Amino acid sequence: MPILDEVLSVNRQFVQNPLSQYRQAVTGKIPRKKLAIFTCMDTRLVDFLEPAMGIKREDAIVIKNAGNSVTGNFEATIRSLVIAIYELGIREIMVIGHEDCGVAHSTADQVIRKMLQRGISPDAIKLVREELESWLDHFHRPHDNVRQVVQKIKDNPFIPCDVPVHGLIFEPLTGEISLLVNGYEAVEWGQLRDKKTACLELNLI
Ligand SMILES: [Zn+2]
Image (tube, rainbow, N blue to C red; front, top):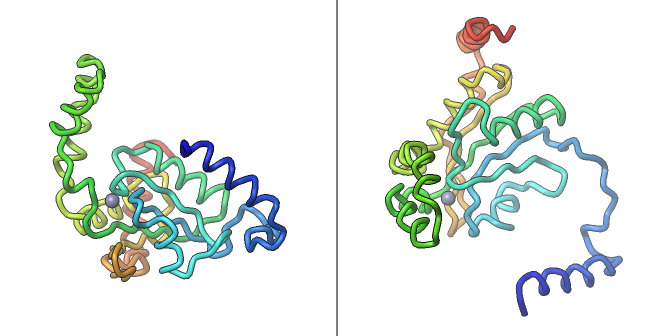
């Protein structure tokens, strides 16, 4: 059965089951723990990372992309965090990388070769080659990436300085989480002043 038919078939049964744990009352879109989790799209994390953290439906916002990467000052992840903070009451961010991340094993050349084989236009590839290289060819260790992403989010002029940004690493086989960056330690006057200076320089405030 094609996956689309399978999903729709399962869904018909799902919505008819009045005993489903998911049918309990929904309280709203504001996350109870006021937490945003930014992690990787890796399939081993599906239905595993949240239980390993004690996170349940409505507890947190979960943002995912390949390699929990941030590639620009107002790219998709930052936009999601902006909405999460200003519209949905998020007060803390956890960047969670994981061991054996596939992005660490990919290179720009490898991806470009596969794109060409699938008929993607060389002219289109030319437009993104530099960006692909600066992302994939510099992602070697998930631990380093988490630290860098935490720093990028903290330095971002649109993220308020009173939002702690933690960095963690997840082991996708055992579910163990290790702390890399304790965001509470960074929320201090020095950083507040730096962020305000950066905002002033960009004429944002
Ligand atoms: Zn990954």
